[in-house]
Length: 470
Image (cartoon, rainbow, N blue to C red; front, side, top):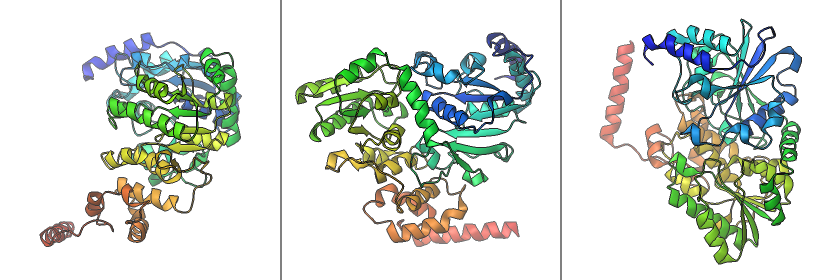
């Protein structure tokens, strides 16, 4: 954004935004930024558990951000079943997309010199007055959370993580001026016994959102869906298995055709395991007709298939049906089924997505690692199960993968990763988590020995750096 346009665009933003509460309310303000109903449910559980203090002590505003590539075509959070019950916990709602229009939430952030102007704009548009503002955000390393933090540089920050990515390293470096403001990482206990790496390099401590509070919120959302026609129709089919779509094509992890085939493989695996009534829950961003190949396979297999394509969380269906199996690739909803509902889970396609994942520091790597290590492979006949607490083998694997992803951020983990790889890099359940190229680059066990010329060049470069420092 050109500096000479900033005042006019800031004024336009002020005109578009709508006040959320009377300016006469002089309590401190807590702004909770969300982009998914699952994330909003996580925040609701945290509020119910008292992790943000008594409600009367602060004015709570829910800031909705639609981060899809084309926000106008994506499912709006406000239209999802159960949203109203979540929103009732807040004193008002705000729309980030409308506030910064025509910019995209993932792309826009104020320049440092513009931050004071934009803060004045937002304080006026959102009726914040001059009271202290506290920010509760997701994915602090990217916009819109980073943009909010930059606009309110004096505000304390709380980060919440609503999925398996909390167990992986922070994907981008943060300025120390930003990192020092983060008070904690709130996360669900999806893998009991596994400690999140997220923001740990900045000394930020993780804090669990209580299981019972989150389970109660999910039950509340399901209650709101009691009369939903999609739920009624799907439940009437008496399904015993649910397939989870993730829309991996949108992440460039698979082509559309490959993802359709992945869903077909999930169905075949469920059929082979004895299930005759199956529900498919597409990702909310999946295009229309995305389940056509599934319908054709179901017809060939003589299986009753129901597509649950309404504005619903998969967890809503867990509440309504006595499922015996949930199948996915590496969806967080797999672990929600197992941890909060005791439903056996299985995976399909996880290893091949892991194998083609690039670059190595891709933040989907840790979710894939966790699912690959803990969840039964349906296509090779492994028995679906509830994984339970993290086995002793998981933490060292996750930390070694995390070190290889972001070694500069975690230099203190090198010795630990070296020891693990020296003992296990060739093990069948470990080797496919590390590329030889990456291990070679980092000089870790399992890599290839650098040729003498390369080694000499490396030693020369190191000595040159030392001489310059001297």
